[in-house]
Every structure is written in C-alpha cells, then in structure tokens.
Length: 145
Image (cartoon, rainbow, N blue to C red; front, side):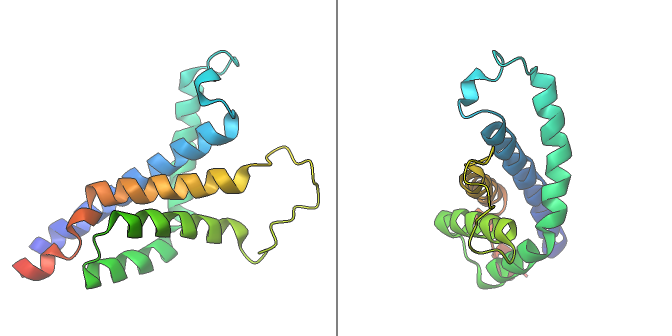
C-alpha cells in the first residue's frame, strides 16, 4: 500500500512541477520585467490561461525522460535539492536543444534571445517544486515495505 501512495504522490508532484515550470516559462518569455506585465496590457487571466495550456505540453514532452530520472532517484533514494534542481534545468535544456547543440538559430537578433535561460529557469523551478512535494522523501517506500 505504501508503494501505491508513493506513486500517487509522484504523479501529483510531477503535475505541480509542470505547472510551476509553465508559469516560470510564461512569465519569463512574455516580458523581461516580470512585474510590468499588467502595465503591458496583458490581464492576469490571460497569463493563467497560457500557463494552463503550457503545463500539459511540458508534461507530455518531458514525461519519458523524467520518468527515467525519477525511477533512478526513487530506487537510489536520492533526496538532494541540488540533484532535482540541476537535473530539472539540465533536462529542460537537453529537451530544448534536441539535436542542435550549437543553439544557433541563424538570426543573431532573434525575438526571444533569452529563451535558453528561461527554459533552464523553468526546469530548475520544476525540479524544486518536485523536490518540495515528493523528492524530499524519495525511497521512503523501501524502508516501510
């Protein structure tokens, strides 16, 4: 029964991490000055709608690599906050680069010139939220089983 509860906690933590990553990504990409979004004419409801659309997309894209990382973290009972933050950022960057490791978009004056930084920050935020909910107690099910 402890394993079933742990799986439910992992699912809730992953969903929450996707929402946090989507929020950081949305705010980071919409405006360099995050406290100035209301004066830019964007209502808060629109920001939350973008976050609500982005979270499932992030969750679907990152599901399989994250599943492998979380299985290893649970199996080895890795509980370090730095582990989850670093792997969240690294996984986000790896997924954003894909096979193009140069990061050269061809246009030196691109509209989103900070996209890699924002993507890394979103991955770090997702990793931290996951650690806060489920990562601190990784591997606990092995002790109680």
